[in-house]
Image 1: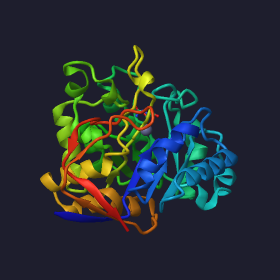
Image 2: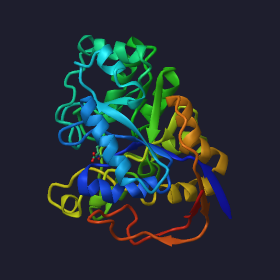
Image 3: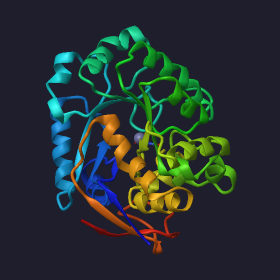
Length: 335
Ligand code: NCD
Ligand code: ZN
């Protein structure tokens, strides 16, 4: 069997920089028409020069493919209307990290004082710039996302015209919040559709499945699968593919992040063709994001077939999810 997807999009992607960028970016640009690029470099992307030069490096690394990087800035409450307006089409969204909550987020927001954030969030509302949030508190690790839901709701109510994307949701509570506020949306990763905490730490510890937010309980995964597989219009695919060198993962202080870029599309085809259908995959992988972000990605047709492939052990020094294992779908061609 074959399916054809039009202009797949990955609306949450870490491409890093330099050598790592050159290894990982082509693995996404081969099969995706575009991706929302996370700004958590060291130092983070906070100026126009940073953003434009990073975009140029991404275009260089992906020059053999039709691929549009949708760029983001690292949230600062000092951004004002004129500064944000000056980016024009170069800026697609702003990513907000609570300080210190995940990889390279040290310069993020502490405290969530709405009054302090308001001027920037008002400017974003006026400019129709979506706010992408890594929604975790610094509470107990399994409860961090659920504890953040009231903050999402407070922001959604205080800034009704601001589109707020709850990034890489992992809980039933976040799924439920989608229904309560018109301006809340979400990305869902491949790995959170597949694994629970048991896969990470239930047997031998699996560092390559360790990420933030940590995978949760079976009923949370069920809630995510439910909205993703029916392609709920407020959810879209965001891989959160987050490469780290092997020594940083297989270490006594394991870096957070699952590297899924090379397998994302084939594995999603496998899941959707067993549990849902091609139309819903098209919506989850592209159409919903086009509507939510108001973007028109470049034309690209990706043909997938239900034929087995064995996942590579490593890409450069990065170990992908399912390294050495079989996936029952694969990319046949790109047009
Ligand atoms: C991401 C990274 O490595 O940049 N890590 C992760 O576990 N997901 C950051 C993030 O999105 O939290
Ligand atoms: Zn991320």
